[in-house]
Image (tube, rainbow, N blue to C red; front, side, top):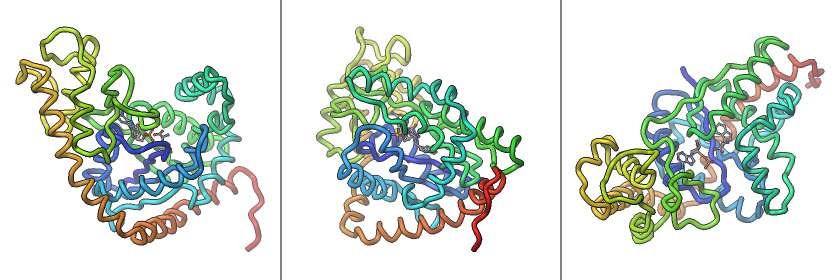
Length: 333
Ligand code: AMP
Ligand code: TRP
């Protein structure tokens, strides 16, 4: 059976971009067609300045929202990265296989490091080695497929390179995974700045719709979305990024094709209204289920405990095999 692994970082509240670009597909498609593991990658949240209490809160919230979005712990494995030691154990070995040049070429590293330096801050070493930990996440489970948005494909490519190199040097140990991407709304853009992605780490978000936003907040944000000069509703990512983003969101929420949908509108206002309605309807059941789960935190904890136990069992043999293959003396039982 195909194995799937994906992760979400608890660095901010989950957004509509996370949902349309990743989580919805995990729930509707991936968990049913494969042996799937979904991980709250809390160790990755420590690669930039962080507030411990916030990371803790967001990790719990992300787990609750993944379940509210339809991930079924009877069908797939939902767990927290730091609960399973194998990630960190394997990451170190992969640091001995990847090169410093490879790390420095990563676009996400270059962008985040430049931003941090521009603010006069320092760059954590873990930001540089981030892709190796991500590779460990994936390779420890022998994942065949890694569903991610566009921004993560470079990291999955690196994971492949590291897996191939390890296998060549030390004998076949890892499955070589591949990135898969959703067809619609692979990249949801910020409503205020439609040329950059709707990211959850943005501090405040007039242009970011969060999964837990009240209907009024959703309507306000969509109504204030930046549109392009001109008045015609046309789908053109380059020339009309604002309107095209709304068309893509509408298509992803309500079905249809952005280009075809554009023909049904003569005004920006009507498009915004329908888009807001579609987003509100999409989020309603997720928010209702989230509320129920929040009333029963012990249940979420139980799911995460079981998930971690299952994940550990799956990862352990592969990570042990990697330790042996690379030349480390096995510990006596
Ligand atoms: P992150 O928020 O960076 O932890 O990403 C979690 C998952 O959601 C990854 O697969 C991302 O590629 C995806 N994702 C995050 N933001 C967006 C967005 N604006 N559009 C589409 N996918 C996204
Ligand atoms: N780096 C990913 C992101 O920013 C999160 C992540 C960490 C991940 N480990 C992973 C995604 C393993 C897929 C597989 O979105």
